[in-house]
Image (cartoon, one colour):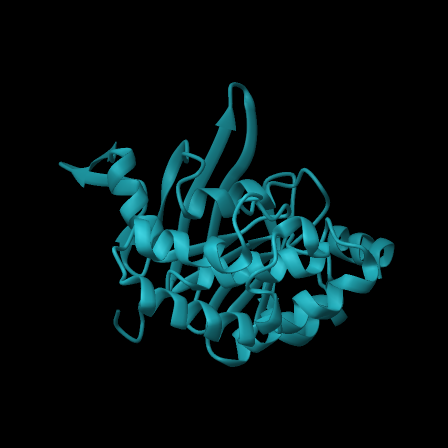
Length: 256
């Protein structure tokens, strides 16, 4: 990747379900090593946009590139053709994703959850995968929980395991879809602290969040979406403390 190539480049992306336009010509770039937070009311298209970045959702038109590579499609003769699921899965190896709900394997221990994909998908040696998993568990503050099962953990602990599991694939990009929205309020801080540390370590992150304090303090940029459109995008503190858009001002007054 050259110094000028953004980690994510979203170019005139539209997404529709039948006659319903969920995304309407989104243009957005996320520079490598930075954090961008997507904020906005429910139903504004934030999660759909996030899922398009790793081709869990197909775009209706436009294009998304990650590290200069076209995601989900190949271009021939000026036309885009969808790639196979196997090729899409290969692209996703470099893109970690953490969902609202933790999606851990309930019948496997914490350690087994984390080493599964590196061994099965990347063919990593088991001892190497275990060593890195333990390093990640220490990083997310759960070194003592490797033999626990998900049901024995709090929601916040399960979400931190989910983050460690995504990191175990050594991605160059992390996507977070409202990672704290399913948590009890007192458990939110531990998850945000893990994400804060990732940001400090230079991980490129695109985060859908309702946590305005996190967006203001940790994000480099914030994009405000409403009704499938980015209405304002800029430096995080500026967007949140000195919004220019009337709809954004209205939104912020209702959530802060």
